[in-house]
Picture 1 (spheres, rainbow, N blue to C red):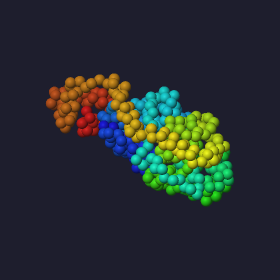
Picture 2 (cartoon, rainbow, N blue to C red):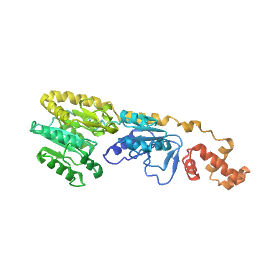
Picture 3 (spheres, rainbow, N blue to C red):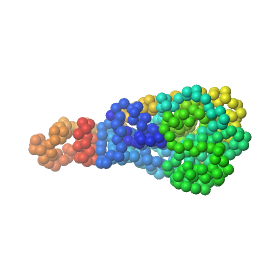
Picture 4 (cartoon, rainbow, N blue to C red):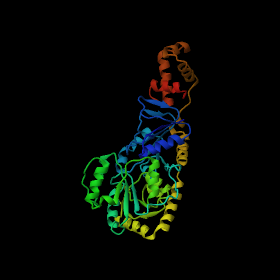
Length: 408
């Protein structure tokens, strides 16, 4: 049994990942918001909170294998919390080679799990593109890390050269504090207009001279609706400064056959086959995309026409199809099958400890166990403490849960 603790509802990244792992992993149980300390025998896989290396569900523990899933962009902060990794987990899984290497550099055991694409939804259909406009897709929540300002600046450069260019913006952001990180940008004028993302970004576009008829702010829609939007666009742009994963939005768009322009250097490296924009290395190993390079790549794709875009789209689709949720689930299974070092070193229960466990299973109290086995209560207490220690648990409540579940 694998116990999975991460969101599964919604269309944001963590929920998409959790939902697909939950439906793909065999013998998997989703267990979130555990109210009381609980220790299970099966492996536990948990999302990690931000850069803290702390589990989202700290009350849930495995006595065999604890695995954390991390998507960390800020390693200057993560270094301050690196001791948590050993405290809570046997191993950390990350969403990209770049992130795994950075975690390992902190002295933490880590492996890579590339997220997958649901090919039943995201796949090419050969549907015709919009004819009257040159549709440019930009996806990912509006914020500095995602390079929203780079997209706006590049679009401003090319919109007069390509009169039919239209920017499709899937920028929904429920976290105003991350949206307002765009105030760091040196590329655009940014004055917060609202905490609501659409009202705010509409004001930002106006401040930067982008007319309302040259862009569409897309609401949050279902995956099936997004697939239709991806197929209708001529090209997608992802000048992200940092991605700890492979960028699910970009992968899903690629799987639909969308030609892709993106920044390399972080998580994109694991899946990006198409046009790669230039960038400079920033502190914390982020990238600073070149606006001129992005504008040039868009203009070049437009000038080369339909055949060139078709070729790019096919390359994108082939690259994305290599990454499946089945493959991601196999990685999770493999690391969960490994026994933790602590578990390998633990001693088996003695004959008398096994007798105590059997009495506990039968519902006997400590006093009844002592009377049955001819022991003082203090001896029974010491035996129970030894059993707890060997099981990697801390109290009788957790011991009782193990017994109730049949995990002991």
